[in-house]
Length: 64
Image (tube, rainbow, N blue to C red; front, side, top):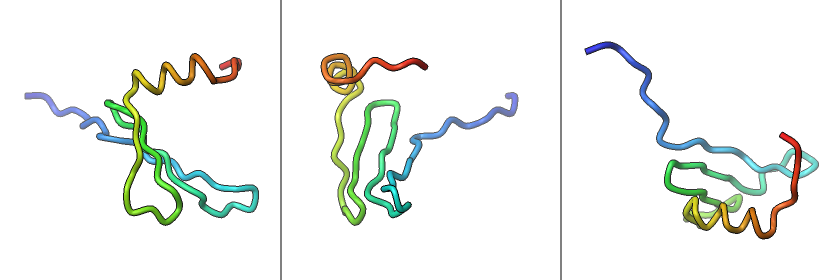
């Protein structure tokens, strides 16, 4: 068997305000998107399908 890189199970990103203070966290997983506030003990999440539907209906068009 060849050596290989193990894929990440998730990617976390801090959400900060204009002063740099943390206001929450976003976690991107293969199955969905999760949100947790600054001091939250639990995550709130949606499936990728629900997230895509929301973004198509309510998101702003932007250039890549």
